[in-house]
Amino acid sequence: MTEYLIYFNQQWVGDHSEEWFRARGPLAKAVVDEMKAAGVYVFAGGLEEDNAAFTADDTSGTLLFTDGPYVESKEFLGGLTVVNVADEAAARMWAGKIAQACGWPQEVRRFKPNGPGDGAGA
Image (cartoon, rainbow, N blue to C red; front, side, top):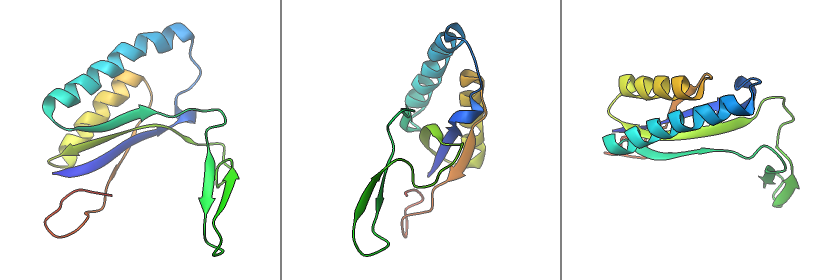
């Protein structure tokens, strides 16, 4: 089994009405419930957009905490899901279900293996 990260940038969501978003909630919850039932669910969640980012940086040898993201960018992570699946085909299937339920694109990346005998981990 291997862990995959399925995620989206907030800018990929697009402009939609509150009614549209409310209609998507049950669809996304149904996919999460399906992942749990299939035994592949590890974690899923959306991220806060306002005043939620800070940076921890020790590259100078002194730990410094700074409000705001490390890189000034128009794109930022909007939400993520981690699944533990047998192969890339299964990761693609779950990413497709999430994309359909949410109504915006999802990107998928495989976690590097932790060590000998461990096919998953970050």
